[in-house]
Length: 283
Image 1 (cartoon, rainbow, N blue to C red):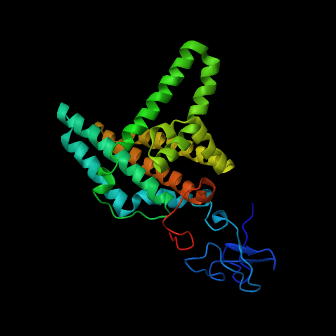
Image 2 (image 1 turned 180 degrees about the vertical axis):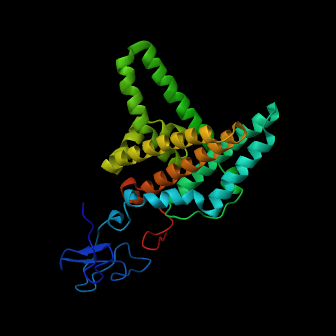
């Protein structure tokens, strides 16, 4: 679908339309008070019709370079660096291994923070606080539980229904997993993230763009494996593992930021309330 632009500002996407005058307006041309859900036409006075946030927000496939830059911003970069350094310093013992596992949990929680902030319309990282990690720290464990249940269900299918049915269920699991992550980020409930009805409803509301998202996520995952493989070939063993961990975190934040942006782009379809109005969002 082609983008609709304001009649009086041809370089700005339109936000509202007057069906009576057949004129499209941007937000500058159709201001509204806080009490108004819809502004009035400045020409005829009739209530304007929303063209939807999708006409204003840039499609995620046009913002690929921004997704790659996001983890290089000071806040996420420092978070990754600190977690990596802690992991290196404590390695070599059982206690150190347990601390490294804790750092993985902390990183997954921060990745969900990135996803939620992006879904709210914050396209640049917000300042990091300890509450980002401590609040609802059970979220990574719910994610692990979703993965475990999916794995167990597919293992059951393979053992009892054969490889043919298993191939179908594993494909469906892979395709539905990003939606499950997005549902968990929005609702914070395990049963919603594993509920096929909720997950399928999310996919349906996003539409074809969801499958485009899956393609990009698959390419990012493959790209991270390729980069880690190259580093293992050119770096000494003492540096290869830390480098691989950093690459894994970097690409993970790209993917979580991308999924959050998709929620932001389609928040009206998903019935999701955002904090940062898209007319004001900048990158």
